[in-house]
Length: 180
Image: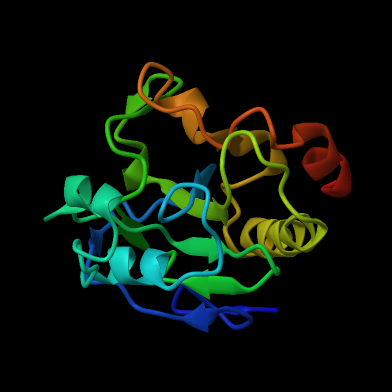
């Protein structure tokens, strides 16, 4: 598994228009998120559509709040373990929003965002953990400033705003699989 211009060879490519250049070219943090559209529903096409900027906000009443939203992540890992990539890791995806890691604001500038198809309270699947570990190992090998010690949840960099990946995410299982 390798990268070519920031694109992961093992991921299905589904390009998003919601990205820009990293201001310093740095990739040094991994942020774990969760997402489901509609909330708690899995396996539907709406996450791809949201990140591609073509979500039909009339498809579900809960989508009205998403009208005009320009967001993306680098990756999505679906419940079955499928890995989808929306933005090159060499570019800045728009996943973290207002955020802070250590003394640094604007985590999108230097972070890769991985969305897990899920919710804060529903357990993630074995296939998701397996794919997340493989992807994380590939990212650490590709980007020397990234390490297992520089992996956080969205809740850690935006604590008053976000709760994901939530209490259902098994940090111990994930980090142990990475050798931490």
